[in-house]
Length: 122
Image 1 (cartoon, rainbow, N blue to C red):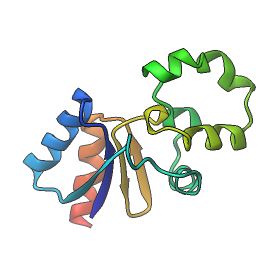
Image 2: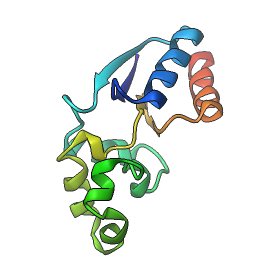
Image 3: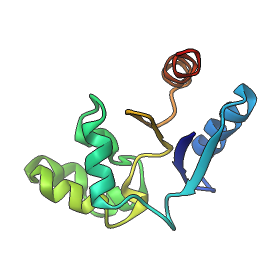
Image 4: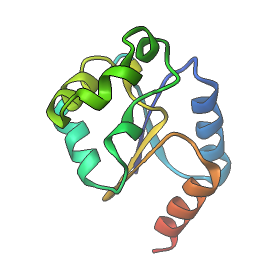
């Protein structure tokens, strides 16, 4: 079963969950604000794929902008970025879908369809 970190007020998350429901794909929804991934989990998710670390940040989020992270991230080391992501779920790109050996950050229907339907078949 897949884990989907999402935020109940996020329209993209709602769209992603609706898509999963329509496809009949089982998942466990996790409230990213209340139960965000810890640093160890984020490190594990990062190591599972080919996503750059910046893709794990919610770059359009209010907190990201308030913290001026677009200016600060390039100067930060990976350890600092992992620690920062673990401090607040609102910094993490959502929805964050975690499968067996892979992770997808954000909802891009074609990307999800390719990965999830391939998982279902294989």
